[in-house]
Length: 337
Image (cartoon, rainbow, N blue to C red; front, side, top):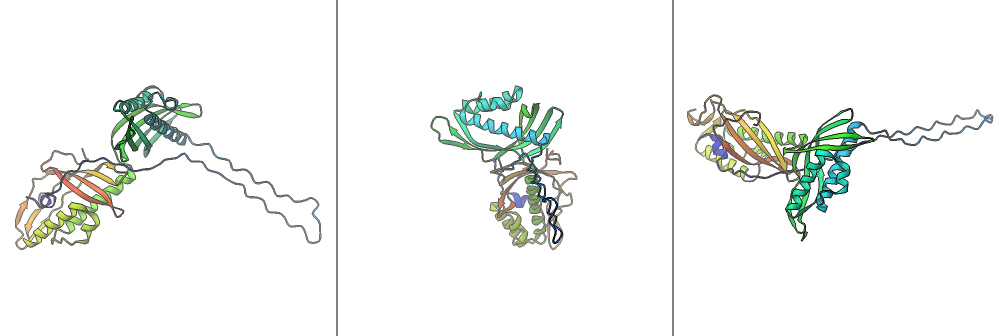
């Protein structure tokens, strides 16, 4: 058995979903004129005309750009959708005002599905817009929207589910309507993670493997990098396995190449799931520290291992808390698919 598997052998796959908040708001800017200073009168002479200070100009808000107007309209649509979910009315007037055509039908379908299950929802849908494009009177955007929603029984008003800020990708299209924009396309996609959150998750994930490999030769269960990058049962099992390796006179060599992808975040962006197609080092494995003899491991050139890991925010840091080997000799592609 390869040493990677020793470290991971007791990890269990945890299934969850994720969320966090990033609000986008339309911007305005203001400018105030600076009053002119008075010119002092010549000493001993009265000015021929009184010197007056001009009135400061009033603050004037610039008109929002098309992109800002599109974002503001999209946010109003999300608020209207939540109002419809809370009322259980798929023909809610606010929703009909903010959407039309296929976009309205898609939004109404979400309300109908919730109502048919005997539920309503309260809270908000929080955007994390990833891309926006405006061409003339047409606009499109991509959003990793967070579901900060709690579902209740429509009759008893008892809480039955908490979406916990789970995120899913949305593609939306809008059409200009005078000074406003109306949503006319709305499609739900897969789970997602906002870009900034995803980057922090990947930093934590790769830092974890840096620490694991650094602690493997010679095996050091007290390596400070482990506690800084791992948590929960994952940290316990790494320390147990490294202790076993040290006591048996073993070392681990030959780090593979990671290709991690953040699948989604949940619990208001405090938990994350990473899928990793690792390209194994064919010269790697577990070796006798004294003789250099290969004890376990060794892979064919190009062999890959598919991992799934869960990370959580611990002391303001993303740390790996579970790692599962999904496939030891995988046909996974190193782009996360």
